[in-house]
Every structure is written in C-alpha cells, then in structure tokens.
Image 1 (cartoon, rainbow, N blue to C red):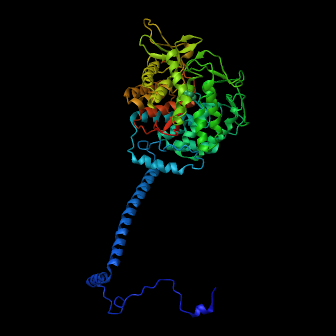
Image 2: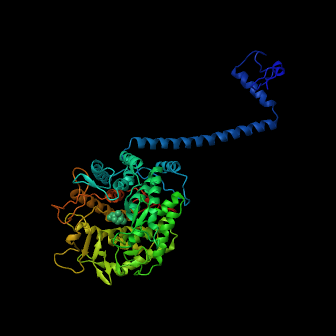
Image 3: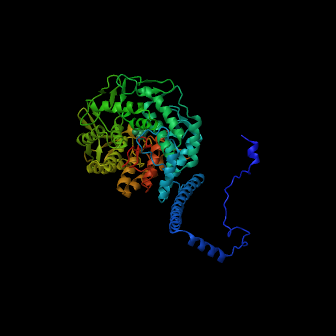
Amino acid sequence: MYSGAAAAGPPRRDFISVTLGPEEAVGVGGYNNGKAWRRRSCWRKWKQLSRLQRSVILFLFAFLAVCGIISYTSVGEAWKSMCSVQLRIARMRFPCICSWRGAVIEPDQSTEPPSSKITEPEKHLSVEAEDEKEAVPINERQLAVIEAFRHAWKGYKDFAWGHDELKPLSKSYSEWFGLGLTLIDALDTLWILGLKEEFEEARKWVANDLIFDKNVDVNLFESTIRILGGLLSTYHLSGDSLFLEKAKDIGNRLMPAFKTPSKIPYSDVNIGRGTAHPPRWTSDSTVAEVTSIQLEFRELSRLTGDEKFQKAVDEVMKHVHTLSGKNDGLVPMFINTNSGQFTHLGVYTLGARADSYYEYLLKQWIQGGKKENELLEDYMRAIEGVKKHLLQRSEPKKLTFVGELAHGHFSAKMDHLVCFLPGTLALGAHNGLPADHMKLAETLIETCYQMYAQVETGLSPEIVHFNLHAQKGHRDVEIKPADRHNLLRPETVESLFYMYRFTGDKKYQDWGWEILQSFNRYTRVPTGGYTSINNVQNPSNPEPRDKMESFFLGETLKYMFLLFSDDIDLINLDKYIFNTEAHPLPIWVPA
Ligand code: DMJ
C-alpha cells in the first residue's frame, strides 16, 4: 500500500550501490585510467588479499574457464545440428534426385505403443542419421527406373487420377474398390524414389479425397496389403501423421471381417456399413489371404496402442498352427470360416492362394524380434516340406523349380508368384536360418530368371510348365496358351533385390536390368503408363491388355530401384520388413 510516510523517507532505489574506496573514486586523486596505473593498482589489490581469498578467486577462474570450454563445444554441436536441419530443408525445397535420399526416417524401434508421439522426434532422428553418412549418389540404372516410374505416373495422373487402376490404351480407368488404389500403393515408392513434388500432390489427394466411409465391398487381404500397408509405411517414411490417421480409419473399418464363428476372417468387408461376408459361392476363405494380413494389423496395434488388431490376427495364426491337414508343413489352399478347418485337402502349392502364408511366417517372426517360436517352427517345417515334395529339376538346363502336389501327383507347374520364394529364403538365411536355405535361394532365382530369359519377349508368363525329360529342340520352360500373359508382376525382381543385397553379386542387378528393358520394350504405352500383356511369346504383337496393376508402381518399380542401389541403408533390411505388397514396416527389435 502506498503511504505518505514512505514517500517522506529516503528515495527507494532499484539498483545495487557499489561503494568504491577513496582512491578509486572519481574525483579523489583525479581520474587516472593509464595502463600502468591500472596494472599497479590491480597488483597492489591482489597482494592485499589473504592466501585463502586468492585461492578462492583462482579456483573460480579455473571453474569458469572449464564451463566456458564445455558450453562452447555444445553450442558447436547445436549449431552443427541446426545446419544439418537447414541442409535438409533446403534439399526438400529444391529436390534434386541426385542427392535426395528417400528413406530418411529411422524406424521407430520401441516396442511400446507410440500412440501420442507422432512426427517430430522421428524427423529429428532421421536428419542426424542421414547427415552422418555420405549420401550414395543415384546411378544411371536407378535414373532409368525413375524415368519409367514418371512415365507410368503421368498416365495415371492424366487419365485415372484418384481411381483404382489406369487403363493406358483407352486412356481411362477401372475401379475395384473405388479408393485410389494405385495412388495409395505408390505413395512410399514416390518417397523412396525422391519424387517430392509428385508425393506432395498425392498427399493432397489423400488429405482431401480419400474417404473410407463408403458403401463398398472390399477384399480384406487386398485392402490390407495395399491400403493399410501402404499408409503405414508412408507414415513411417514421411513421419506425417495424416497417413497414420487414415491407416487407423481403414483398419477399424476392416475389423468386422473377424466376426465369424471360427474367427477366421471373411474375405469381404463393406467398409461403409461395417458388415462382412464370404464370397457368394462358398463360406471358405483363402489360406494365403487370412494369414497375410498380420504384419499390417500387428503394426497398427503397436502404433495405436489398441491391441484388438493384433489379437485378431494372432488368433488366426495360432489356430492355423494347430490345424490338421498339413503335409510336412505345407498347407491346403482353403479354410472354412464356420468350422475353422482346412478344406479341399490334398493340394499343395507355393503359388496362388498359399504363397504369402509361407512368406508371412518368416516375416512375422522377424518383425516381432525372432521370439515367436511357433512361427519359426511352421516356417522351417514348411521349407522341409517344399524340399521333400515340391522340388524337381528340369531338362535340359537342370533348373531347380517348385512344382505342385495334387493328391499325391506331382505337377511340374510353377506360377510366377512362386518367385517370391528365393527372396524369402535369402532373408531367412540372413536372419540366421540354415545356409542351405541360401543355396536353395540361389538355384531358384536362376530358375525365375530363366522364366524371363527363355521367352521371346524376355518377359515371364503367369505360369510355366517345366520339362522333366530332355526333348530335342525343347527348352526347360513350356507355356500353355491360357498362361502366357504377364501382369507386370514383381516377384522375380523382388527376389533379385534380396539376392543382390545379401550377396553383392552384380549378375542379379544385370538380370533385373534386362527385365526392365523388356518391360520398356513390350509394355510401355507411349501416351503414359505401362500395360499388362496377353502374349509374352509374340514380340511383334504382345497383345496389350489395357491395364496397369497398382503393384507395378507399388512393388515392381520400387524393387527395381532398390535392386540397382548400392546403399544398404536405403530401406535397411535389418530395420525394415517388407509386407507382401512391398511396403516396408519397421522391425520392432532390429538386428
Ligand atoms: C501383389 O498384390 C502381392 O505381391 C501379393 O502377395 C501377390 N500378388 C500381387 C503381385 O503379384
């Protein structure tokens, strides 16, 4: 409170007064600021101090000097990291494909659900991790992949933007789910290839136009591997929470598929209505489909902290683990959603309807830190089953291939889809599984390459039959008229990528390069896009089908780009695991 008495007292001073001694006071003895005088005066003062006082002052000086040095170095560090952030921002503003590396975010390796930490911490980590290392320049072959991707993207952008698939010849599009499938499948490829502008444009579409609240039936497996997988990996690479939000949305909308008597999910879900059902003609689901959604749902649980996603898919794996009807680890192709039992027993293939069951056994085991022993057991048993029942050698080149078994009869038929296997075997060997898995991978990838090299267009058909007996004038590979199409599939290029990463043998890059040339020669549409073809045996008329599958951008070109790269940190295989649609997800406990 203001008081008159206080006002009458001495004036209040808001400063500290320092009383100087008479000699130092200005005006006493006159102002003398000469250097010699100041030196003498300081020395006299110092001499007047006691020994203790001098020691205290010396100690204080020494202490301050040490503090100074420490803070200088940490300011230096802070400055250095600020500079690297600036460098990164500059690179993003002026994207140059020669120096901009796509895979910059280190995967979040904590096993805790990081529901509240969305973007920033990961970004800062990545900046430092990236700048510590010399950037590996993009080479000629990678540039050729970027060129191919841009050409495909141009077609999609001009004629099919926001729709599922491009029809490059009729310059239109086709719808499957009506969810911009190609765009979503391609998001992380855009990021990895460093196509920043195109990525931003696609991101805008996801932010403004991707709406899942639609009365539409989607296939659980296809939408999980392409949409959920694509969104999750793009979230990890870009650190942009938009993609996680969208992933949560679609993940929740797919959950009704698991409401079945056996908990084996239905194949189809209406994502707007929240209802699910099996295909119209059966109550069976496909074994590969119900066992190849796990990587994505498990990761969604880890990110959201909501365990329901992981619980649902883990239950499927546990159930399948216990089922009878397997043949030395090989599974039938169908499973009933009511009884939970395998159906159509006695037919075993590594191709369509079973393929990614085997792939996901190994990959889940790796994703979870190699702790889930049942997954490993099932995988190891299955590979023994493949060796025992499905391997044969062709004539004349003695190519080792994986055939099929139907009720005890061996068929020398192999789907191109089976060519995922060399890559998976190599990945297992890299993760400590037996060396003979790698040997088998080496022989099988040679076969997959021959499925291209022995064909007139240099492109593999969908299915081949191998000759078991030498016949004059016959190659190893025979093709039936109904099987001679090529859908721009990725499996061989995918396996070439793994083989090159783990062996460093350049022949795998050369084989991939040949395949890219063949795609360019026979499937490229001049006005934009690439097309599936009907006849790989007719170079003068491969009969274009007028469809570019979303996996050409999501998988085939991505694996090509990675195959030609010599940068093992461009999606490091000790940190990431690819889902079956080539979307990299973090390994929870990296090697
Ligand atoms: C993709 O959708 C996936 O790779 C799936 O596992 C198999 N089929 C296509 C590519 O061929």
